[in-house]
View 1 (spheres, one colour):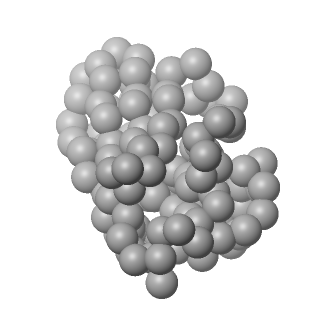
View 2 (tube, one colour):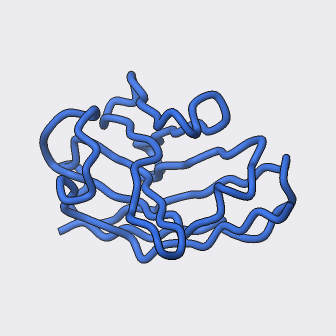
Length: 125
């Protein structure tokens, strides 16, 4: 089993920045792909970004590409999401997720085995 705990959410004005962190524990050596998802009120959970265990490649949703950066620190067992130029439409609960197999380009929520509890990000206009 793998346990994931997110932190770093909060309230920020449009154009500002936030950095989310996901602390992983347990059988983290079994994880192949790490990801961030988000879910806004009344909407389905959507993919934000993925990174494989070696951190060599990253993959982003079009809506955040160029503004968000996902990174993996194997020594600290963390996965971070740096969010810049935030927009009100980025408001959502952000979730860290992980899976032990598959491609970093496979980004449906049902393809991920482990989830954190989520952290709220609110961007005011």
